[in-house]
Length: 262
Image (cartoon, rainbow, N blue to C red; front, top):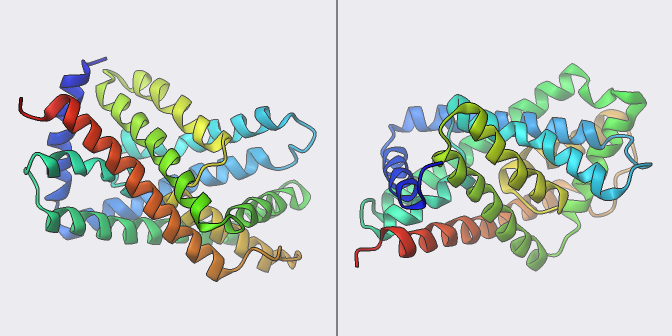
């Protein structure tokens, strides 16, 4: 691993480069990231299907390991993920980028992530992924989406803060790892932890919530009272706010510790 000071400097450079990407490249990489995280969501839902007989912690941890696929693909294959880009607060505090560049990067990538996630879900529904294990996959997707949609706003914001602290710590450690194997090794634990804890990650929810809603529509299963397109949209708003606070706050903390001029 690189030293924390070296990681902070390297990530600041990376964030500056990301903020300056041409709009077309930024959008394309954002769509890919939404799809990559969507693959992780599908893996988590599959591993959670039919896991009622297992202890809760084991089932949740297994789903978390499966979901880690998403961030592994983003960081090793290369893509633009909104939640990781909240670390741009560090170069913002250094005055290496302006508020306009930060707002551009966050908004473009957030929308692109949404497009990629929804496209991936539509393909998964078209492929019949939700029909696996005699409908257990669809039931798992619907239950998970309903649980997320039923949370109060304050709980979603707090959960979003915690989730993105863990995600950005995974990004931070992966930036300091020296090989692909090392990067995977440091990505999995924090990502598995946030999924096991049931925390709210806005980009993951861009695939998990539509997956549950579309699986319900495709199978005709009874729709839980808390789950609707409007409640799914509200979840994304509050989860995004929490993710910004968590990741942006971590970026500012590392700026103050490692990057601020003495």
